[in-house]
Length: 218
Image (cartoon, rainbow, N blue to C red; front, side, top):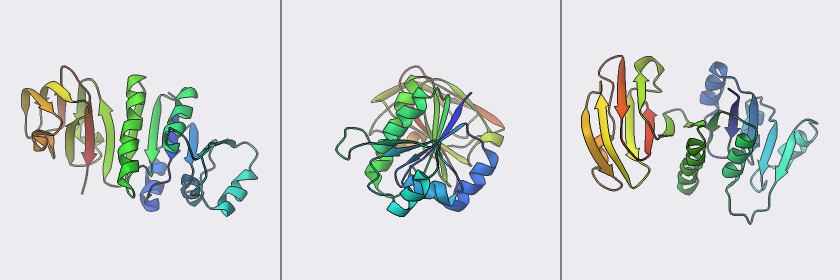
């Protein structure tokens, strides 16, 4: 499976990112606008740089433009897509089966919410896509999944409806189990928040809809 790292222009904890990259390897790296500054701080040389380049320092651009193999995709600021969305589209055209986003949370909330929606096209195409930061691993689910304690990002796991309704949710092996529960946007939001595994593994099943899954640690 070809794996792609997308470094966006949001707030990025460099110590966390360095630790994360010690455990992971990627076939392709895409820097998004000011994410190029984070890539430089992490010692990464991207394969692609995508964006309108309105937030990255010109001195950083000049240094990276001297590197021959980088592909530059500059877009006008007046566009329908976010820079991260354009980077996601590039990763998909490269045939990547797993995409990880760094720097996609923190800072402006509108950008964070937009980045959540960037994951949906990946889900539709059968591509694994995660947003990660020091506390959270965020992704979308449209089918059942088994969770293993040793693989979880942290102690807590939460489920929220991405679609208006998610029907027939059954949680087995969780501290707070459910059996065939329907949930809707804006109703009983606390029902699937801050759950935990009761043992070494647990299973989520549901009949229809799309869930936001957040694995969290304090």
